Image 1 (cartoon, rainbow, N blue to C red):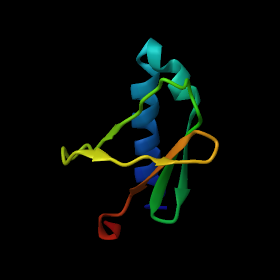
Image 2: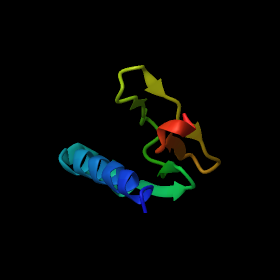
Image 3: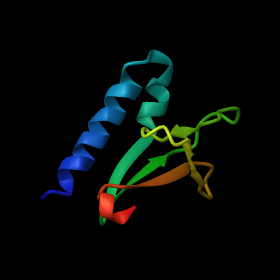
Image 4: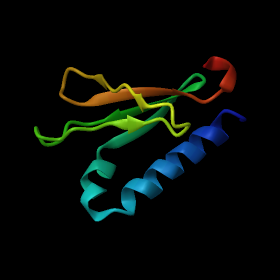
Amino acid sequence: MARVAPAARLFAQLLRHLSSAAPDSDLASRVLVTLKGDRAVVRIDPGPPEEGLTVSDPAGTGERPLRPSGDGGAALEIALDARAR
């Protein structure tokens, strides 16, 4: 149960951020967040060819790498448990 709470908060933060900006509504509809053990997997379906996405680390340590997928989308795994980092 403890692992669900951080994922729910992460999902709520992502959804709140993406849905609050009209130009990002298309992006918000293409984002899927799932749990994989003690990690959240953020999957982004393909968008326009000119789209360039970056993910900033909230700790201010730089950008997090997006892993390209075969269909043109991207994915990112985020540790939910500090011991998993």
